[in-house]
Amino acid sequence: MDCVTALPPGGDRSFNAFPVSVDRYRKAPMFLPRHKYDIAMNKSIMIWNRVISPGGLLKNIISDRDPKFTSALWKNLHKLFGTRLSFSTVYHPQTDRSEEKMIQTLEEMIRVFCAYIL
Image (cartoon, rainbow, N blue to C red; front, side, top):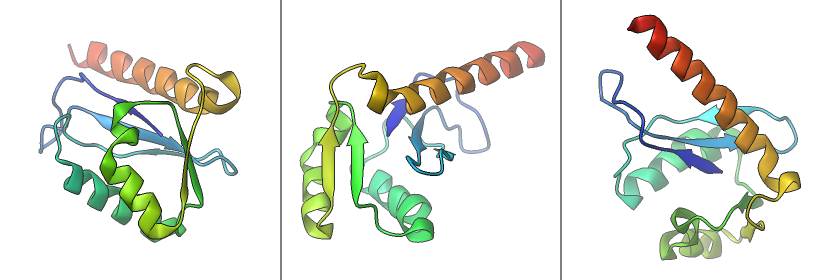
């Protein structure tokens, strides 16, 4: 999981950020529009409703050492569910590549769309 922020507000609810998740096995991306400064509870509910409920409980989440994923909330959630939060080394291609590539592609699409509108 990774997060893209600092986007221009868009949509009827003015979302300006979104977490990006890529399923390791299916390589299926998931983009979930959010507000940059959402409280932790809103993010937890969104992850539960959009990621865990449809696909089942995750056994492992691999993330870089972003403070969003090292917080007490995430540690407690993983302890509660009996899952594991693994940290990759920063910019490690084997673990970080699919999210980073997906983010690059998505940012290009957003730039093209914004340029088309202007």
